Length: 83
Image 1: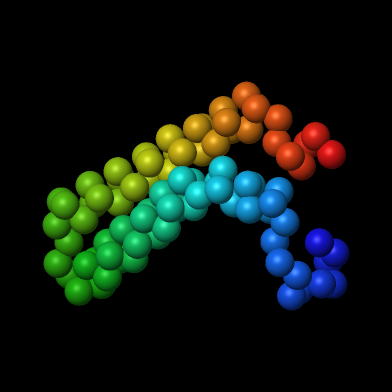
Image 2 (image 1 turned 90 degrees about the vertical axis):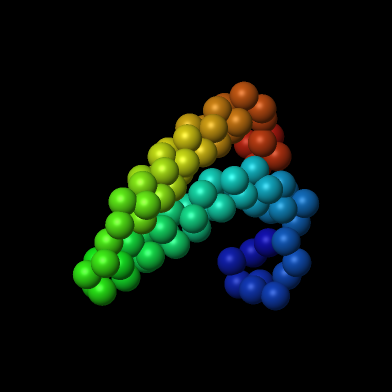
């Protein structure tokens, strides 16, 4: 896909790359949601330990998924690196 072709469909390699990164993207989304919830609770002056623990667990999940993604990328050749 060229840089100027914004309406082109994603290639099979693009879809495979997205699928490989999906667990990390989902973990990052959960982390962002937990952070927003925590910041909102702080803003209202009603923080609780559950909000803090949820944000911490979500952050740890992002770290785990980052390491898992690196492991997946270094174990198997990706379609992009093979070309």
